[in-house]
Image (tube, rainbow, N blue to C red; front, side):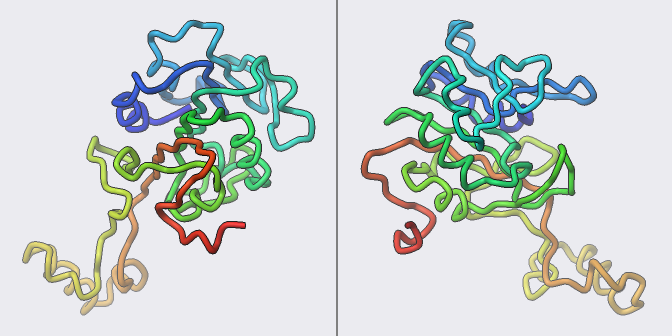
Length: 232
């Protein structure tokens, strides 16, 4: 599943996304509002779109845990031209094996669309393990080139997208002077009166934000976000 912002952002590149298509974490949970990556692919035939999850249910074509040995053999295609993986990796204990499996499944010149939290509340489905940065995604997928111009950050609400190096934060340190006078006054008053001893004493507060990255599998990849010396 995905957020509305994820669908809005990646829909801009729908004509570049070929089949067969794999969605990892495709279970439709009727308990809350969800947005379907499948809706990006209005021209893709039904039999070229495959949804997998570790749980059975609506939207799931195959119950598969791709971190397990032999799991990839259960899928109807050996390679996919497009892979969606949205808000799944934070729930996977063995993300390194998962990343390796995704790279194996993605065809050369195929596109990986991945969304992960940078800063988000804890949400156990069934576990909540990780938070990510652009560098960590580069590290996890050494054979995939991530395109900065087609990647973005979004917050919990609203339709504003930020650049990959623009993680939104409320700066309460030296940059406090950038904010409007009444806002600065309110923060300084809270500090002076010591009404709040937790949040407004910090240098900065991160908004809840998600990272959306567009990557292409290459035979000779480059690394846009991490120095190559860190890649094994």
